[in-house]
Image (cartoon, rainbow, N blue to C red; front, side, top):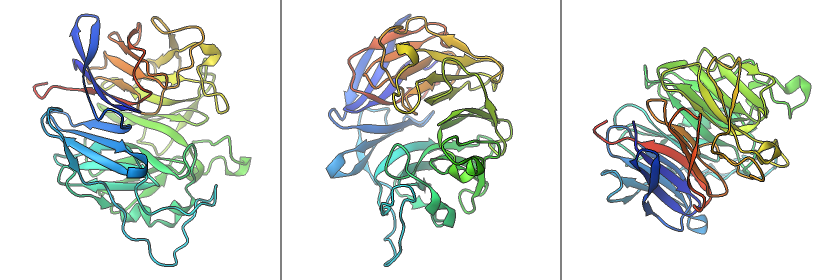
Length: 372
């Protein structure tokens, strides 16, 4: 099982190592003081890609080819020049959409040497040379429906979930906040808007089922059964059995169906984990109790997992990419906005705190050794 964690925070990237049974500790850190918005450890290669959000100094990319011993600055996905006279405004806020990378929100690996990158404002980029160059997926960016995407928690829409089908790396599905679910079967040459069965409670009733108005917070799939998708939506939890074309909503999920993070078991399509929160105005754990919920039967029933987690006056919010499961489906980890980090070695039955003093956690990923 993977015995290292990469934890991207508001002030640096940390690696956490399992030193013996039941004990983890911070092994090293990089980029201290810099927000690390997302990180990708490419399995079996030793390659790590980290995205840094440096505010006035812009977005930067760092790449290591040796598991983190050495880093080099890498090219950032860049938009083409915006055509003169083109009006391109966010329909919700009315702000002019910049044709420049504001935030790198997601990274995913495809076939060897292939990377996908989702950014704000709503761009999807592809690299076929390990991140040395990037190409904007113009078929998606130029789709006229893209101009109906809306900013949600951020001023502009963004791509936060990228699912590469392990059976066919030309088949890629992305989640857009706020812009629904899109899929391609030809590596981005053509795109299709999918998502029948999704529901946006924040829209007028006659528009609630429009797939273009949906706000998926996070989408993941089961690698061994990639037609099974799990979604944490803005107003509920949804599951799909056909790669996202059709969804069914899971009702009466306690303590809440709201949240941001979801993780899918790598081999069991019926098992997934979520971190619930109180919706919208508060965005804290329900009743101040931090819990993880787990289903093992495709969403028919959810267990509330609380052993080892704070059960009073806990105000930890867990972001989209801050919950991770290892490739065996046994170890889980998540970090919170309070700078706390927890690990479970038994699928979430019990949790142990690694730290309560990290900067706010933005993303978590297990790092395999190259010999795994």
